Picture 1 (cartoon, rainbow, N blue to C red):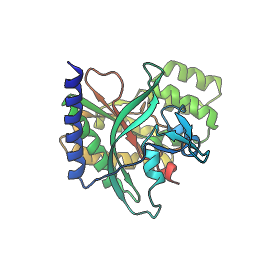
Picture 2 (picture 1 turned 120 degrees about the vertical axis):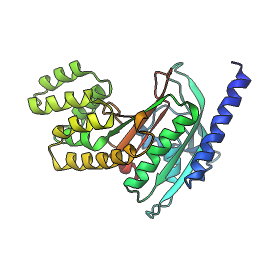
Picture 3 (picture 1 turned 135 degrees about the vertical axis):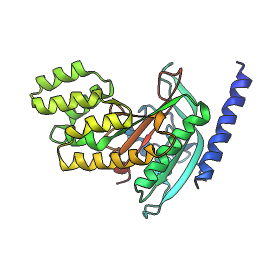
Picture 4 (picture 1 turned 60 degrees about the vertical axis):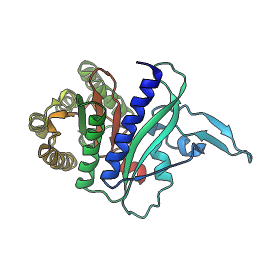
Length: 282
């Protein structure tokens, strides 16, 4: 395939995505190519990489080419609780995982900001699935809920919680078991964490295995929210493409609800990611 054919294919996909988002009432959002560096310096854990391209403005203020779109949208949104639904198609500047060098990357997506409920979450998850479908019919959308992991880790220090989260994200049950034993974590909690790391599959089968792991009020509330979302999904034609996977882990300092990651056949890494980042807004 030639470079021209690739560009034509990319533009065709972007046209489909814009049409999809508009049909759900999302409005286009345009932004500057750069922001004040402090915006990113204060939220490094939210970024894919903490390395950004910086330069000085004429008044000496340190600016940065934007490595992320979400932070810019939140910064420029009025904090009045009013719901805002926007979509974007922007270039971001971040370090490539494959080359280790800075790269200009086209990023398309959407944000639903404000007082959102389970219906809004369902809409965003639906749009995530349909976005993947615009590219290829052979896709999988993995769902998780950060509230369940957060509940299990609530009594542990942050440093240990971070290590455990990373091992769950890697599905590394062996190292996770060893770490729990080394840190004196109770056998019951250790068993629950290892079980959570291995949970993957269709919605009905995973929900059934997940419930016994949810023993606290916080965990049960997260389970109820996830179950409500899954019930809505099961009533659509998308459910055959959706899996529950608790190795989908985002930073708990920002994400506190539903999170998801999308995959296309033939591509090993996720091509789409998102979730509820209520703590970023607080």
